[in-house]
Image 1 (tube, rainbow, N blue to C red):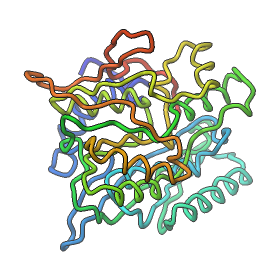
Image 2: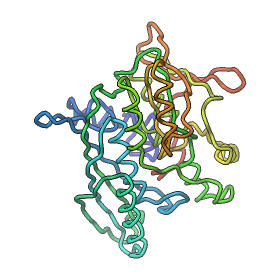
Image 3: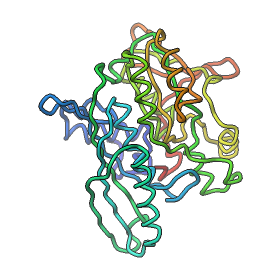
Image 4: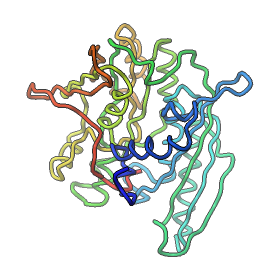
Amino acid sequence: MKYERILLEHGNGGLLTAELIQGLFVKYFSNTFLNRLEDSALLDVKGTRLCFTTDSYVVSPIFFPGGDIGSLAVHGTVNDLSVCGGRPVALSAGFIIEEGFSYADLERITQSMAEAARRAGVQIVTGDTKVVPRGSGGGIYINTSGIGVVDYAAPLSVQSIRSGDVVIVNGAVGDHGAAILNARESVVSVTEILSDSAPLNGLVERILQASPNIHCMRDATRGGLGAILAEMAKATPYEVYLLEDNIPVCESVRGVCEILGFDPLFLANEGKLVVFCPAADADAVLASMRQDAFGCDSVIIGEVREKPGMASGRVVLRTAIGGERMIDLPVGELVPRIC
């Protein structure tokens, strides 16, 4: 490790996060379940296939256009279970609350979590509460864990990606990151940009019913679409070739990025996933996705290509002006406390 102290960049889902996970956590926690490094661990308990995941939420501000820390925590955990082929069943909720935090705000967050869980069809069945001294926390942090049942026969994994797969995204990218930025900086009218935070388990169910040949899915959260695809590509021997013209970005999000100097590909999402499936199944998968409220703008943004001799894969973007550039894991911290 190159650093004596942990930096903000170690938590952004980029290169330093990957180094921290591989160089420290996998080094000491290594086992067959963890080493897959998917969004959820896949377990077999007496013949029942389960998936299990956990995540912590530290977003600032805690209330933002399109959501809040409570609904975000539920959506994030439900989505991590779903993209691994799991049917979410139950969640836990752990609260770390700073002394002096508003009771009314805590009740508002709790109500939001309950409504988000109801919409997603899951229950919050256990939890924990800790209160830390005033000035030693960020108001409120939430940890959620979740468990789901895996019914899909084919293994959904980066290792299942194959040459010839198409890459599908279910709508415009960067909305969540731009909404958080705008809430902090007031770059444009607050009514113009809403977080895309949403439960995707219903959409995933449609996808899995549409094709028995889905190879992999991921929700593009921290680090955005660019970081998640770069991370996935490195675990394969293939090239992921993207078409910039095909990647949907809302004009208001593009405007924020131009003003602040960000790339929408690397802004966080909380309601977007990428799907890898054979080209032959793409029409059926797209048709199914477009029937869902959270997939009506689904589109193919690229394909997976064979690149003989490559030890690890890469992502190449064909730009709108006809050039090509590499998409790699971000090194710096774009937006701290984004989720």
